[in-house]
Length: 81
Image (cartoon, rainbow, N blue to C red):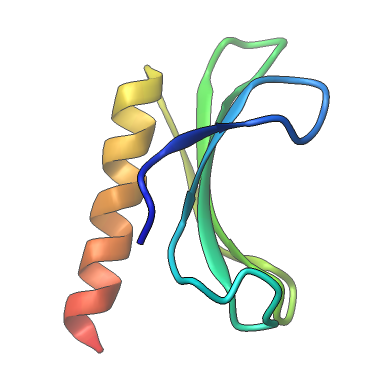
């Protein structure tokens, strides 16, 4: 897994954590965090290129909290495998 890095994708600031090294694989997964422009709420999601693309998502009060929640979801999923 990579560290959280600021992404230049899209029109707004977001942070991405690549969860595996296969960046162009259908099985590639990554965590994303960004702030909703209208509400100020921080959003997080775990996404994949397979299927509908969204594995898990939620909201948080801060960027740090959103990253921590996404990390906890990923860690729990890895422990259950």
